[in-house]
Image 1 (cartoon, rainbow, N blue to C red):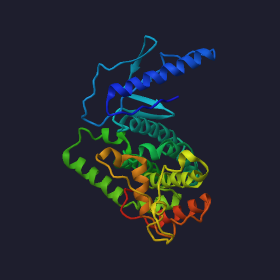
Image 2: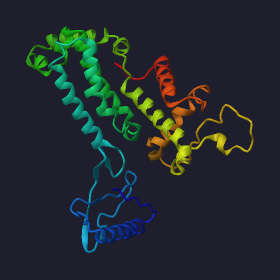
Image 3: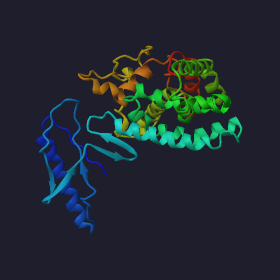
Length: 313
């Protein structure tokens, strides 16, 4: 369970949390249940470089609740400034472990089976919760893409494998500078000769950045479809046309309202990120006439046909 309280005054927010926690604790006791306060934590979310009183405390029936700077909730590690740095480190480590396991079988299985394993054991690691943490770490996603690129290249071009191992370069640690320079140039030449887009297309994959766009828009589309049946979701995203006083349909009526914001933190939110992507789609794609499955296929095609300067190599 997660309880969220917001207020410009930290003391009022803490007081709200304390009252909510007391109410839940009383309800649990009446139901014959006990809250494990040793596993209960609280966190203060704030902007970077904003002063937060380190002496602030949260108590429930004279039991002190531990304050933490990061906490894993439903598989995603949230930190107090919502940078998702720790979560990204966890994803990178899991990527390295999963790709390391694939290295053992890469030479004994065909390419399509290899891609299937990549889709099954590696990409789901970054896909999980990607619309939540991805917009904040978008510039870092190239690190994950690099790991995927290397494993694909090694499978297709086994002779390149040596260039991506520490053991190979360790052998030349004490070699003359001209030898090191020759090896480095050979590595760069081999790397630059690879057409990564062709490899990605052959594997029928989306890049990690493209998967962020795809998963984010599909999240919105699902909300958009079921929101009409769920009152709590109706105002999660608002279309411009919903605020119009006329019946005339314009090209901007299916655009999403972009909320005015005062700080950069909002720009890293899923709400802002989805709004920008959605508003840049074609008028035809934004029409509310497609089922989720049909829209998924059309949007996937849109991503592939509009590949441009997104990171790949």
